[in-house]
Image (cartoon, rainbow, N blue to C red; front, side, top):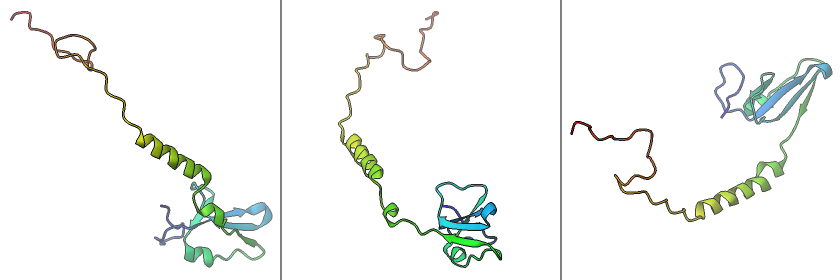
Length: 116
C-alpha cells in the first residue's frame, strides 16, 4: 500500500502523476504498478484537485474497467494453484532404522566412544 506523495498527507494513493516536460503536459492515470522515482502517487482528493502550471495541459487517463477485474492469466494461475493443492502428497521414502546405516541425516553423526 503506497501513500500519497503530498506533504503531510497520510491517505492511500490511487493515481500516479507524471510530467512530460518536453510537451508541457501532466499525465494523471491509474496507480502505477511500481513506484517510479520521477512520478508522484496521489490520493483521490489530491488527484481530483490537481492543477497544472499555466500553459500546461493535464491529461487524465481513466482506468479501463475491464482491467479492474481478474484477467485470464490470474484465473489460470488460481486454477493451477487449486489443482496443485488438491494433489495427494507423495509418500515419504522409507528411512532405515537408527544404527542400520543407510543415508546420512544432516551433517553430524554420532560416533561410538573408542574407550568404551
